[in-house]
Image 1 (spheres, rainbow, N blue to C red):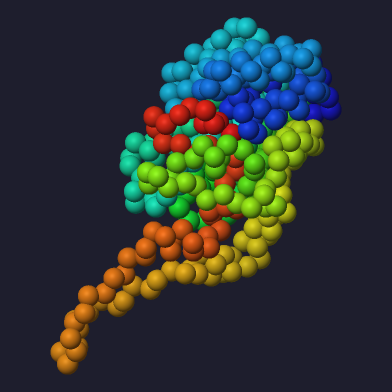
Image 2 (cartoon, rainbow, N blue to C red):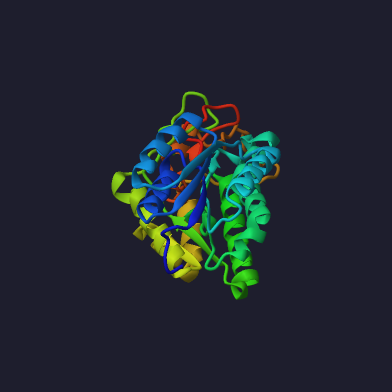
Length: 318
């Protein structure tokens, strides 16, 4: 995309975090904005700040876990604008905790927001995106869409799916001039850890050291670079680059790291008759599990709020 000034952009999860930072970066370049988020007060605050750049800013509360709500908002956008040049699928949520403790409802909720909503939004807007010269779709994925770790299985599933969706769109529509980029940051300083829930009441989300994290503004700058250059995949932070190449060169090393601290279950079978059978506790204490190093705990989340259905909406979007 040669120029951003005068273009019209739709951004999901724009009330805070990475989405708000990308909106700010686009506004500075002169793009008009349509912002979606479930946090309506946050949207209004962001819109006031963005209008100071002299651009048009429209906001709409949208629950991305509800396809009908998405459809209504996209209809409003088409009726009001009629065109769209830039689509930023940024909103996302995470559930942190043992996979076996996630309910079917929690899986449906997470996949609806992280994967099905971007698919629906892109599918419904593709006809008008294709009509615009140099239109672009930016999917804010995560290093978690390229490298997996523990205790965030549903998040990994959704982000791996979003990376695949980005590649498929790029392969199908490249010849039409539609650009598609997957943005994959490492840990980002957002509401992810402060507003997160772990699935265990009273337990907080482990916070990564500040030196491992990128700022929202850094991610936003890389997002605009990806749009301008039509980059297929854009990694952010040295950690994301390191994990990406480590998986490509030595995936066995990641397996070894994820095994550190895990207790081996004893082999099943009858006890020898000349020994007294003793009960064996093979359950990993939760405190030790929290201390055990995991690639996925800090390195593989990218700025999404960790919430359960029904939790506070503030920080829900990236």
